[in-house]
Amino acid sequence: MASFDTFMALRDFVKGKISRYELEDSDPDIYHVSVDNSNRGLSVVKLRFNDDKFWKSVGLHEDDIWFMGMINSNYSGYEFMDWYSVKDDFLSGYTIFGELNEDNVEKLKLISTLIYPKKFDLENEQFRAYFANKLIKTFKVEIENILSDYESEKNSEMTQVAQESIEKELNDYFKDAGFTYVSNDEFTTTVGNLVMWYIRENALHLPIEELLPKIFASNKINVGGWQEDTYEYQDAEKFDSVSFNLSVERNLDKIIEKIEDGLLSDGEFNMQDYLGMVDRISKKFKVGEWINLPKKKDVRFYIENFEMNPNKVVVKLSKGMKQTTLNLTEENFYHLLYQPTLFNLEEI
Image 1: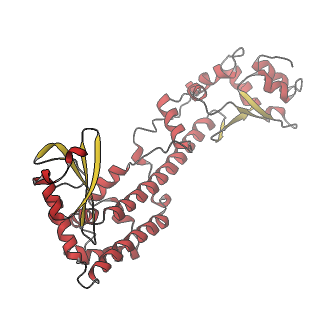
Image 2 (image 1 turned 60 degrees about the vertical axis):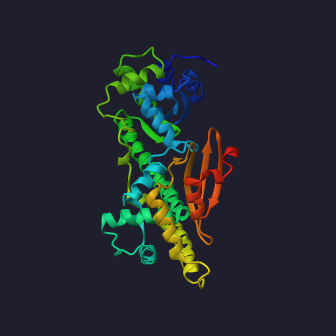
Image 3 (image 1 turned 180 degrees about the horizontal axis):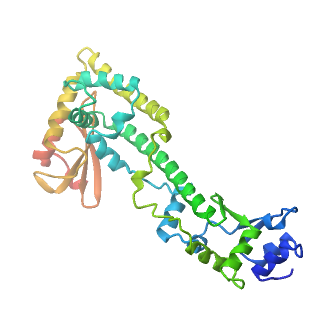
């Protein structure tokens, strides 16, 4: 197969002296040529794409290259918003409440009536914050399920917005120089446009890899800076409200079922006793935080959850590198704190 300098190959292809296969072989950055037989100068050239070296050659910073690769990967799981920030926002009275449909607001109102004797007012920031804290202390599993689903849907929304925003910016950036950004794996221009740039830049002896930086160094359109403020990648229309509210509905129904089972059990289980236990313990000890046992400082405890019917406190214990989990009545929980000798803590 003949070998040509890139510019000479492009010129000879326009004149019909070489085939598209010979043009493709002339430069490692030419992947494919779609021939326009009526005007060979309008034949479309697909160039090397989607690797760091290529992106640097067209003027992208390495941070932007990394960010674009992350959000376009099916395996990276890039997080614009992590679970802990979602939880913190929820406990401050934000995020989740504004995404609920009317049916779920009514379910939440019912739950509030049963477990939180305050006027139900989602317009009140203080009410939302106090109610959120009450919910997660009382129904940890169900509420954390909701928060996890919100995190997933929100990241999906922000990823889609980021992808579209970056694609539009790249479209404008490449179009300004006569190139087309087609998709994540295709970057094209015409044979005639490449010939023009070779002549304009007086770069007849350079391969395409060295021509591209010259072309885009003079581009007047700014591109990149995509990771500087990721919270701007939001669009309520791209948040899957239907899917999220179905998840909320399932979890709120579980909460209501738990409450109703407790209230209708003819004295076998008293929901108010359960709520009272949760209140008493969570007011004294922060749920979800490691704390040293008051009477045995080398052992730490962590209130993981509360269980109902029978009422139990789920407590993790840690000593050195070892951990264990106990399900304790409220009475035994206080025995653990202040009479730890009743427990075989040396065996943790």
